[in-house]
Image: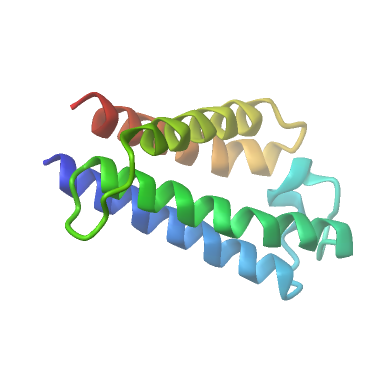
Length: 123
């Protein structure tokens, strides 16, 4: 069961990475990210932040997969704990953001992802 949860977590991280790609390409979703400071497309600085987040998201997904024992990934266990910590911090930030749409969408999503990472790491 832990491997399946890790797969779902990694798939969600990949989906969020694609959301970041959409932001970089100019999707008018600024109110759903980075505090909702921009109504439409993000400015260059916001797009750079989105680009930087992509490798972090991929790291998180792979770290949790590795912690669950996914074949071919032999990452140190501490990487899964780092991924869990980053997920929890993201959860808190998404619940306290001034953006109502960001809170409504990403708060619950990140809460579920935090729970999934915790299940994998404590199994």
